[in-house]
Amino acid sequence: MKKNIAFFDFDGTITYKDTLPEIIKYQKGTFTFYSGMIRLSPWLIAMKLKLISNSAAKQKLLTLFFGRMTETEFQQKCDSFISNKLPSLVRPGALAEIKKHQSNNTPVVIVSASPQNWLTGWCHAHNVACIATRLEVVNGYITGRIDGKNCYGEEKVNRINNLYNLAVYNDIFCYGDTKGDKPMLKLATFSFYKPFR
Image (tube, rainbow, N blue to C red; front, side, top):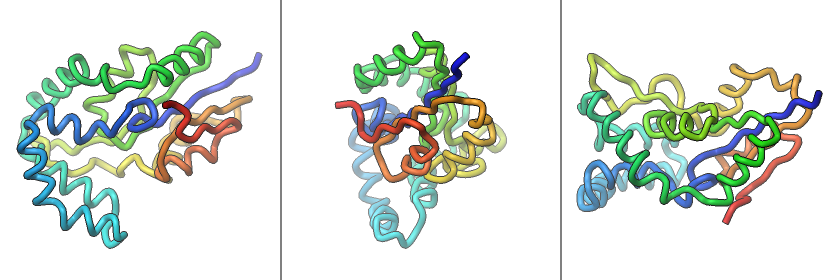
Protein backbone atom coordinates (compact mmCIF):
# COMPACT_ATOMS: atom_id res chain seq x y z
CA MET A 1 0.00 0.00 0.00
CA LYS A 2 1.29 3.45 -0.96
CA LYS A 3 2.37 5.52 2.02
CA ASN A 4 2.66 9.31 1.79
CA ILE A 5 3.22 12.24 4.15
CA ALA A 6 2.81 16.03 3.85
CA PHE A 7 4.78 18.77 5.64
CA PHE A 8 3.49 22.35 5.72
CA ASP A 9 5.17 25.52 6.90
CA PHE A 10 2.63 27.63 8.79
CA ASP A 11 3.37 31.38 8.68
CA GLY A 12 2.85 32.80 5.21
CA THR A 13 2.07 29.37 3.75
CA ILE A 14 -1.08 28.37 5.61
CA THR A 15 -1.67 31.92 6.88
CA TYR A 16 -1.79 35.21 4.98
CA LYS A 17 0.85 36.74 7.24
CA ASP A 18 3.36 36.02 9.98
CA THR A 19 1.47 35.19 13.17
CA LEU A 20 4.14 36.47 15.59
CA PRO A 21 3.37 40.18 15.01
CA GLU A 22 -0.32 39.37 15.06
CA ILE A 23 -0.22 37.64 18.43
CA ILE A 24 1.83 40.49 19.90
CA LYS A 25 -0.81 42.96 18.73
CA TYR A 26 -3.56 40.68 20.04
CA GLN A 27 -1.99 40.32 23.49
CA LYS A 28 -0.34 43.70 23.94
CA GLY A 29 -2.15 46.11 21.64
CA THR A 30 -1.11 47.88 18.44
CA PHE A 31 0.58 50.85 20.14
CA THR A 32 2.76 48.61 22.31
CA PHE A 33 3.66 46.51 19.27
CA TYR A 34 4.87 49.44 17.16
CA SER A 35 6.68 51.20 20.01
CA GLY A 36 8.38 47.91 20.83
CA MET A 37 9.43 47.40 17.22
CA ILE A 38 11.07 50.83 17.25
CA ARG A 39 13.06 49.78 20.30
CA LEU A 40 14.03 46.55 18.55
CA SER A 41 14.92 48.17 15.22
CA PRO A 42 18.74 47.98 15.73
CA TRP A 43 18.46 44.22 16.27
CA LEU A 44 16.12 43.76 13.31
CA ILE A 45 18.43 45.74 11.04
CA ALA A 46 21.39 43.67 12.26
CA MET A 47 19.47 40.51 11.39
CA LYS A 48 18.69 41.79 7.89
CA LEU A 49 22.39 42.57 7.42
CA LYS A 50 23.21 39.04 8.68
CA LEU A 51 25.20 40.45 11.60
CA ILE A 52 23.12 38.42 14.03
CA SER A 53 21.05 35.27 13.54
CA ASN A 54 17.32 35.04 13.03
CA SER A 55 17.19 33.18 16.35
CA ALA A 56 19.03 35.93 18.27
CA ALA A 57 16.72 38.66 16.94
CA LYS A 58 13.66 36.53 17.63
CA GLN A 59 14.70 36.00 21.25
CA LYS A 60 15.14 39.75 21.72
CA LEU A 61 11.60 40.27 20.43
CA LEU A 62 10.09 37.48 22.52
CA THR A 63 11.87 38.72 25.65
CA LEU A 64 10.66 42.29 25.17
CA PHE A 65 7.01 41.38 24.66
CA PHE A 66 6.55 38.16 26.64
CA GLY A 67 9.46 37.88 29.05
CA ARG A 68 8.33 37.63 32.71
CA MET A 69 4.78 36.60 31.79
CA THR A 70 3.57 33.53 33.60
CA GLU A 71 3.30 30.49 31.37
CA THR A 72 -0.36 30.14 32.42
CA GLU A 73 -1.32 33.69 31.42
CA PHE A 74 0.65 33.46 28.18
CA GLN A 75 -1.00 30.18 27.19
CA GLN A 76 -4.48 31.46 28.04
CA LYS A 77 -3.93 34.44 25.74
CA CYS A 78 -2.52 32.18 23.02
CA ASP A 79 -5.60 29.96 23.27
CA SER A 80 -7.82 33.04 22.94
CA PHE A 81 -5.84 34.08 19.84
CA ILE A 82 -6.34 30.60 18.33
CA SER A 83 -10.10 30.83 18.83
CA ASN A 84 -10.74 34.48 18.01
CA LYS A 85 -8.10 35.73 15.58
CA LEU A 86 -6.23 32.87 13.91
CA PRO A 87 -9.15 31.55 11.79
CA SER A 88 -9.30 34.86 9.88
CA LEU A 89 -5.60 34.56 8.99
CA VAL A 90 -5.81 31.10 7.42
CA ARG A 91 -5.80 30.76 3.63
CA PRO A 92 -8.83 28.75 2.43
CA GLY A 93 -6.71 27.13 -0.28
CA ALA A 94 -4.22 25.85 2.27
CA LEU A 95 -6.95 24.41 4.45
CA ALA A 96 -8.49 22.73 1.39
CA GLU A 97 -5.12 21.19 0.51
CA ILE A 98 -4.73 19.83 4.04
CA LYS A 99 -8.20 18.29 3.87
CA LYS A 100 -7.40 16.78 0.47
CA HIS A 101 -4.36 15.02 1.91
CA GLN A 102 -6.36 13.82 4.88
CA SER A 103 -9.06 12.42 2.58
CA ASN A 104 -6.31 10.34 0.95
CA ASN A 105 -5.14 9.09 4.38
CA THR A 106 -1.95 11.15 4.10
CA PRO A 107 -0.70 12.37 7.50
CA VAL A 108 -0.18 16.15 7.65
CA VAL A 109 2.53 17.76 9.78
CA ILE A 110 2.93 21.49 10.46
CA VAL A 111 6.61 22.47 10.75
CA SER A 112 6.98 26.03 12.03
CA ALA A 113 9.44 28.47 13.52
CA SER A 114 6.57 29.99 15.50
CA PRO A 115 6.26 28.91 19.14
CA GLN A 116 4.08 25.88 19.68
CA ASN A 117 1.92 27.81 22.18
CA TRP A 118 -0.32 29.24 19.47
CA LEU A 119 -0.01 26.37 17.01
CA THR A 120 -0.73 23.14 18.88
CA GLY A 121 -4.35 24.04 19.64
CA TRP A 122 -5.01 24.87 15.98
CA CYS A 123 -3.23 21.70 14.85
CA HIS A 124 -5.20 19.55 17.27
CA ALA A 125 -8.48 21.05 16.03
CA HIS A 126 -7.54 20.19 12.43
CA ASN A 127 -6.14 16.74 13.22
CA VAL A 128 -2.60 17.53 12.10
CA ALA A 129 0.73 16.97 13.87
CA CYS A 130 2.85 19.91 15.04
CA ILE A 131 6.60 20.52 15.07
CA ALA A 132 7.42 24.02 16.30
CA THR A 133 9.76 26.21 18.31
CA ARG A 134 9.58 25.73 22.07
CA LEU A 135 9.88 28.62 24.53
CA GLU A 136 11.93 28.37 27.70
CA VAL A 137 9.96 28.42 30.96
CA VAL A 138 11.74 28.94 34.30
CA ASN A 139 9.81 28.72 37.59
CA GLY A 140 6.53 29.08 35.71
CA TYR A 141 7.56 32.20 33.75
CA ILE A 142 8.28 32.73 30.07
CA THR A 143 11.87 34.00 29.74
CA GLY A 144 11.69 34.98 26.06
CA ARG A 145 14.52 32.58 25.24
CA ILE A 146 14.11 29.59 22.96
CA ASP A 147 14.27 26.13 24.49
CA GLY A 148 16.67 24.27 22.21
CA LYS A 149 16.89 25.60 18.64
CA ASN A 150 14.64 27.82 16.58
CA CYS A 151 12.68 25.55 14.22
CA TYR A 152 13.91 27.37 11.12
CA GLY A 153 15.94 26.40 8.06
CA GLU A 154 17.99 23.25 8.55
CA GLU A 155 16.46 22.78 12.00
CA LYS A 156 13.14 21.97 10.31
CA VAL A 157 14.88 19.10 8.52
CA ASN A 158 16.54 17.94 11.75
CA ARG A 159 13.22 17.88 13.61
CA ILE A 160 11.50 15.99 10.80
CA ASN A 161 14.27 13.40 10.59
CA ASN A 162 14.23 12.93 14.36
CA LEU A 163 10.53 12.04 14.30
CA TYR A 164 9.96 10.40 10.91
CA ASN A 165 11.77 7.76 8.86
CA LEU A 166 11.27 9.32 5.45
CA ALA A 167 12.60 6.23 3.69
CA VAL A 168 9.31 4.42 4.33
CA TYR A 169 7.23 6.97 2.38
CA ASN A 170 6.56 6.74 -1.34
CA ASP A 171 5.78 10.42 -1.75
CA ILE A 172 6.68 13.37 0.46
CA PHE A 173 4.80 16.63 -0.09
CA CYS A 174 6.35 19.85 1.27
CA TYR A 175 4.88 23.36 1.26
CA GLY A 176 6.71 26.59 2.14
CA ASP A 177 7.06 30.25 1.27
CA THR A 178 10.44 31.58 2.46
CA LYS A 179 14.15 30.73 2.33
CA GLY A 180 13.75 29.25 5.81
CA ASP A 181 11.58 26.53 4.24
CA LYS A 182 13.91 25.63 1.37
CA PRO A 183 15.87 22.94 3.26
CA MET A 184 12.57 21.25 4.08
CA LEU A 185 11.38 21.56 0.48
CA LYS A 186 14.46 19.61 -0.63
CA LEU A 187 13.15 16.58 1.25
CA ALA A 188 10.12 16.40 -1.01
CA THR A 189 9.22 14.28 -3.97
CA PHE A 190 6.67 17.03 -4.62
CA SER A 191 7.56 20.53 -3.36
CA PHE A 192 5.37 23.63 -3.49
CA TYR A 193 6.76 27.15 -3.00
CA LYS A 194 4.22 29.91 -2.30
CA PRO A 195 1.42 27.65 -3.54
CA PHE A 196 -1.61 29.44 -2.08
CA ARG A 197 -2.90 32.94 -2.85
